[in-house]
Amino acid sequence: MTRWFENIALNEIFPLGSHTFTADEIIRFASLYDPQYFHLDPEAAKHSHFGGLVASGWHTVSVGHRRMVDALDAEEQRLRGLGEEPGISGPSPGVNSMDFKVPVRPGDTVSYELVVTDKRASNSIPGWGLLFNRITATNQRGELVYTAEVVGFSKLRDYRVPIGQRVLLALTRWPLIGGLLKRRS
Image 1 (tube, rainbow, N blue to C red):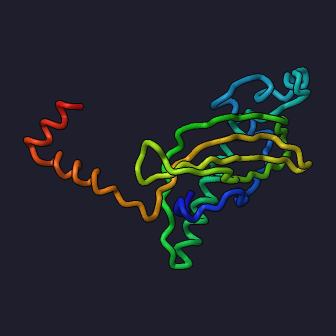
Image 2: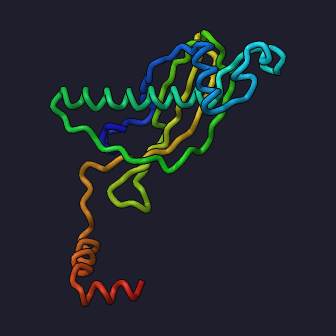
Image 3: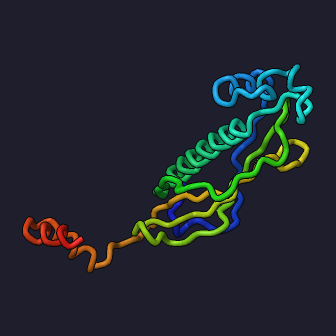
């Protein structure tokens, strides 16, 4: 997220944009990353349980992730344009769940959204917070195509290292004390 942890409101919807999937694009992605017949061969796919060519779930996710990165970059630029310093986002420690609800077919336009559903300060990385996000993708018929619960790090704006930790850090820079502290741990 390109906002500081303290500035992120829960349940605010971030529209990420939409994408129309074409048969050629579905086949191209599948040939590179997920070469299953129902993603590659329109004729053979007619006889699958999908009843026709469908996009790989990973294709749907990848497009959504790209939309998310582009939207976050646009938010960073918007904040800079207002003279504000954007926050610092960190990596994602993981995906808690991911569900593919309805297949994406050629011609489907899928719209993506991100919502921060919860947040808390990190227990293991001082100065950072964890954002619990839900990403959803909906097709032009209003059907939920994909949903995921993902976690991401966001930097706290006003974090100060506690005095005790600063003292320990300073002491470790002294060769004799630093050596003793390393042996104890």
